[in-house]
Length: 124
Image (tube, rainbow, N blue to C red; front, side, top):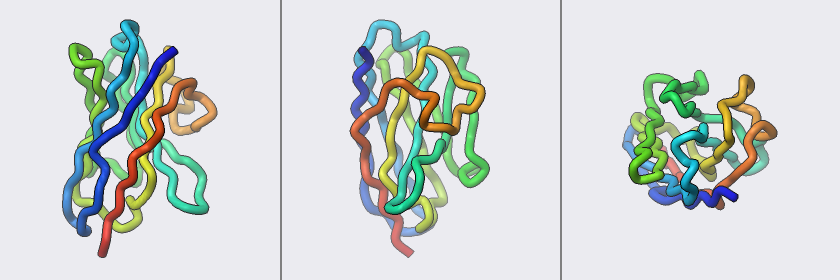
């Protein structure tokens, strides 16, 4: 069982930056693929970024060039650095894990483990 705990959410003005962290509790962390998803009120949960066990990354078009996903295997921690934030980035952000990087990584149905979420609010 993989347990995921997100932190780092908060409120920021448009154009600002925030960094999210996701602590994973499993000795197999280094072999897992990880991802960040977000869900705004009334909208579907959508994939933001993913990182494979080999370090390969995927990004949603809406965040390319602004968000960076990374991981520190020694600390069992996943990160999401968010720059140039926009009001439309406002959402609950979730960390997800899977034993492999799904081909359709942006679909929430392809990830097995989830954190409880952390709120990000961007004001204009």
